[in-house]
Image 1 (cartoon, rainbow, N blue to C red):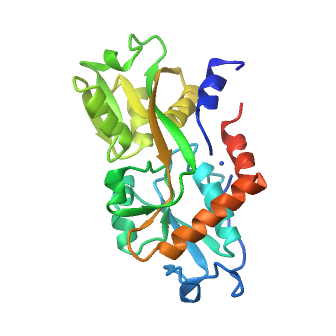
Image 2 (cartoon, rainbow, N blue to C red):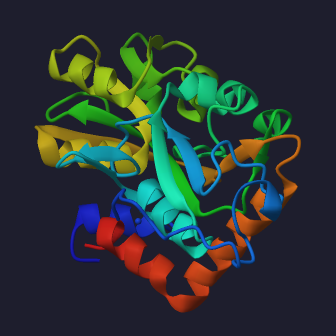
Length: 264
């Protein structure tokens, strides 16, 4: 690898383009739309996705449109299913708990959601589409070099995430400060209100490009992301999404999207 950053990016395993209207909703398509297809969509002819935005590089707004790795995969999946794509910005806690799906607010959640046994109790997951690591972001010149150094420090985490759970388990002597999203977390470390952020590596890597911050430590956790759907009644939708993910990998389109976000 040519640089420390490229090495960190290469350690990430798989993922990546832009929200816009997709396809025209064909009645003849195998995956079709609405009741005729058995997908039980909240709006016929559309795949409605809920996501906690911003969370770059997975979902963020640019030039008035939603884009990012998750959003671009969703665009391709909806197009392959001959559906339009609609996006709703929701809080992560309600998303990962399954509340917004159970309420019929959307068909699918795409928001860097780690597959866990606990979440499987309330959610149906697609096949894994991304492997991730946790990490610790600190200001340049910080004396924090590893997770052991977080004892007695204020550490920003996002509520409801596996990063927050990991921090509570692995850094029990740290003072964890919960935030609703990465935007508030990053603002807090910029203002000096927390000493470090513990969250997904690609998100923290983005912050090293935005300001005088560095990755103190990568934390291997064997995490994989999946798209989430309702626990009950989503069998056909899960199968259709998995079919599209396989097609994207087989065609090379998945790798193109991944490279646009994660290759050097």
